[in-house]
Length: 295
Image 1 (cartoon, rainbow, N blue to C red):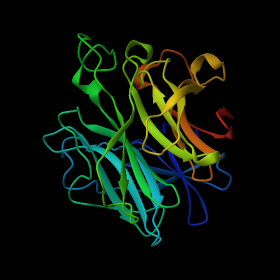
Image 2 (cartoon, helix red, strand yellow):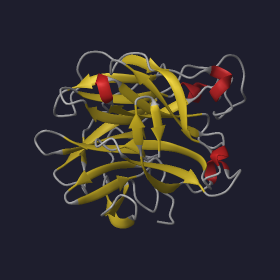
Image 3 (cartoon, one colour):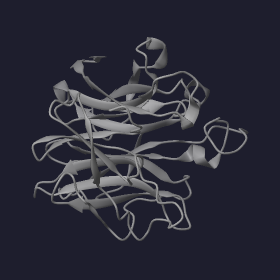
Image 4 (spheres, rainbow, N blue to C red):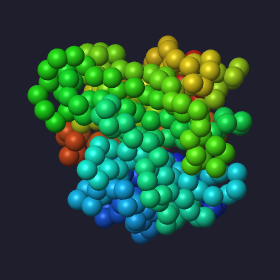
C-alpha cells in the first residue's frame, strides 16, 4: 500500500479480506481491504474511533488490534492501549460489521501492572474452545535489554507470552492464564512478543511470535511447537529475518488467518531506520509440514 501499517492482523469478513493496524494514517485503528490477501487498499474507515473511557485521554494510541468473529456473527477486537494513570492494558470492542466502528467496553479486559503491562493480544478458536494470548511487557520495566526507555542494567525481565481460555462470545475470560513461552535473555535481547496461534497436524500447535527489539534490524519472526495449546512451546525456529535478504528489514508482528495459510506482517524497507521507520504491510502464504515451515 505504500503507507505505514504496523502490527497487522488479518480476517476474512463481509466478503473480503480485512487487515487492521496500529494507530497510523490519521486513524486509531486503520483498516485495509483486499480480494486476494496480497493487494491491499487502505480505506477511509477508523475501526475504533472511540477507544474506551478507561484509556488515557493524553495517550489514545492503539497498538496491535486483532479481530475475530464469534458464533453469533459478532466481530470482536482485542487491542492495546494505555490505561488512564497506569500501564498498557488489553481492551475489547465489538461490531456487527468487519469495518466497524467497534464499540469498546468501559473497562479493560486484561491488565498486569506488576509485570509492566500487557500488549499484543491475539484470539484463536481451536474448534472447541476460544483462547486469547498476549505478551507481558516486562521490558518496559527496564532490566538488561536495550528495548526500553532507560539505561540497561541488571537482569533481563520476563516478557512471558500468556494464554487464557475465553467464552465462545470471545469477550468473557475463563479459568486462569498460563505462561507458554518467554524470552531467552541475551540471545533475543530479552524480548518475545506478538503471539499468533494455529493448530497443525496430529493435534499439535504452532505459536508464531516476534523476538528482539521492534526498532532493531534483528527483529524477526519465529515459531515454536507444543502438543497442547496451553503447554510449553519448544523447538523454536526462525521464519524470516533481515539477513534472509528479502529486502525486508526487521520483519515482525505476524498474524495467521484461521485457514493456516494466509499471513500478514510488517517490515521496513531500509536498514537502521529504528523505531521511527515506516513499517509496511506484507503478505505471504505459509506451508506447514510437520515442523517444517516455509513461505
